[in-house]
Length: 294
Image 1 (cartoon, one colour):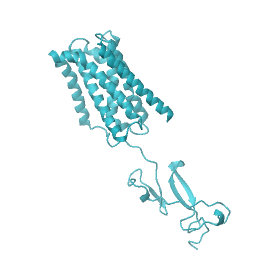
Image 2 (cartoon, one colour):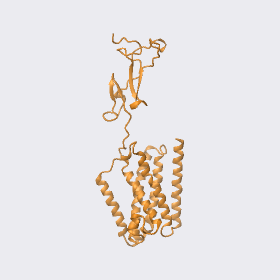
Image 3 (cartoon, helix red, strand yellow):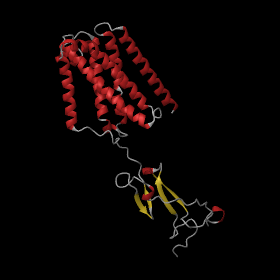
Image 4 (tube, helix red, strand yellow):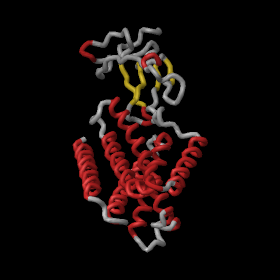
């Protein structure tokens, strides 16, 4: 008769089951127990002598807030039980892929900055000739350090971490802008040929090639940062880290280029580069130690 099955069985004599997320196939496991309202047999055993586990609550869509329609929506399997699939990782909502118009505008602005560096004259050109490269390296060094700090989860509270991420991006854009000014001024002043600056060879100076390499690696880091949302999946997160992490190699190449190419740097410039090296090395060491202890 319905509803009169032995303890630990459902109304039709079947064991009550409920599905929930777990490590089994398809991310789902099944637990069996007595149905709600059924009293277990004496001593916690069924008529066959097998131990009966306590009943578990049925997972319903109401128990899974925020999983409405979509790939994370629970699927009913009968009796009110549902299957909740593993969460699908998506890109952060604040880093959507840029629109094509925004990309074109960014390229136009970058080209304008590069050409503008060659058109300025007088005292402004002299200032940029001496300082544009220094400002670029300092800004990019700060971007590297702030980026490392934001990667250390738990180091900053959520709001401070979000602010640091915005600062990291702003410093990166500022550094690349002054880097383009630096290239434009040097080419316009005849210190390096345009082809040598673009290709990295032809000038007979390997240090110029280091500067070109650093420029391209920083541009790669900026591009992957702009398209961060595209890489925010389990499949692409490692390629993103490799491509975006190329900025470390670019930064080291830029430091060597800045200290050895062209005129001898002033003592305060050497001191600022040494400070950037020390601070970045310390941040890298902290990140390595935290990763090992995690």
